[in-house]
Length: 334
Image: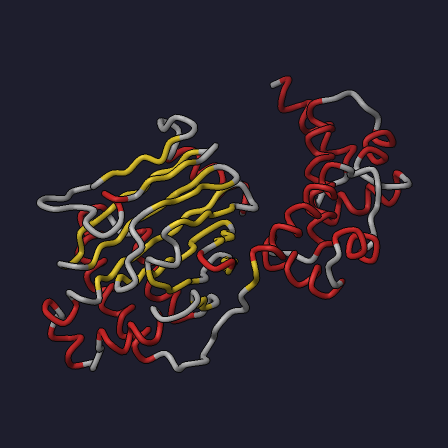
């Protein structure tokens, strides 16, 4: 699934040069990007696209797709503008103001004011991500508030006090969020803006009714996440060696349970599971691109015996390495 997601985003961004965030306004008239897009500056070694829609006066939505390891943002620090970010695919590590780090997987949402992310960076542990940002100017909301929001007793002041006066607030994936966001990504182009209007109202009603401590995710300090990124680099650059949790925790001066918890938050899997998959995917590349023997490849990716390697390979790839190499060779010949 991850491979398909990556390919899909790569296809969408194939015409965008590396090091570029392309800002677009599909099917728009009048003022566009008034809350975020027009004032956004970004720097990335990868590439991305931001498609912004003017939903209501004071409310805009931006579809985002990224390919690369990370992107850095700068924009005005507006503490009365609410930003809701939904991660559709991939994983996002967002380092924000005050050293707070929020980690989102597919279906997760973060809610915060635009002062929190005025100078921030997004990391993409899987090398890609796609999402949707909805920005709401709470100063304008009372004046332009559609009747349905009045009926639902959605109050700008309540939203400001709830989400704009402290650290970012993260909500894990759930059926309610899936119901709100998923249809927006599959809608036909001519239906996207009308649907955005409906879903933006639905989202504000949902957030307004959210209980104070309901469904909040754990936040981490960026120092912890930076250490875990260093651990990840060490593990993936030295596949032939097996590091224990105890070794790593002593080396990086981090509690073993914290190391395991933060690693899973950043990369989406426990350390052992992640490294097993990583080793197998590296082995798949070696099987395709080199003439090294199965035993040699097993040793390169950290397996003592060919038998243990073959078992791990089949667990992840659902095929034995000998068969995988043969299939690749046959495909290349045809």
